Length: 145
Image 1 (tube, rainbow, N blue to C red):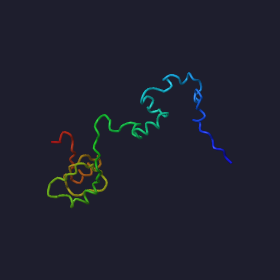
Image 2 (spheres, rainbow, N blue to C red; image 1 turned 30 degrees about the vertical axis):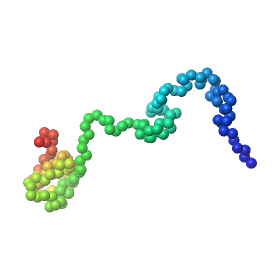
Image 3 (tube, rainbow, N blue to C red; image 1 turned 30 degrees about the horizontal axis):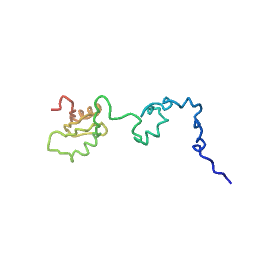
Image 4 (tube, one colour; image 1 turned 90 degrees about the vertical axis):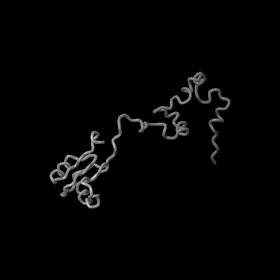
C-alpha cells in the first residue's frame, strides 16, 4: 500500500530558508530580479507563464505592423492567353482594355490588336503583344493623373 507523500510546502513550514539555501541569498530585494515586468524579455523563461497569463502569446516577438518604407500592392496575375479567351466578355466598346491591378504574363498567345492598360507586365509579355500588334500600357506614378 502506497503512503501519501507529504507536500513540499508543508515540509518548509518552520524552516527559515524554505529550501533556498543560505538565508542571506534571499534576504534582500535583489533576489526578486527587478520590479514589475523586469526580466520578461525574449529570454525571460522564468516569468513566461506570468506574461502568457496576463497578455497571451502576443507579448513576445516582433510586430509586423511596424515597418519602414511603403508596402507594394499585391497584383493579380493574368496571362495573355487568358486575355485572348476572355476578350469577348470584356467590354469591347472602348479602344482600351482596363486591367489595372493586374500583372500580365506571357503564357499563351494573343492574336487580336488591343490596347491593354495594366499595372505591370513581364518583358516577354510586352514583346509578344508588340509582335501581335497589341499594345500594353503600363501604369506608372507619372501617368497617374
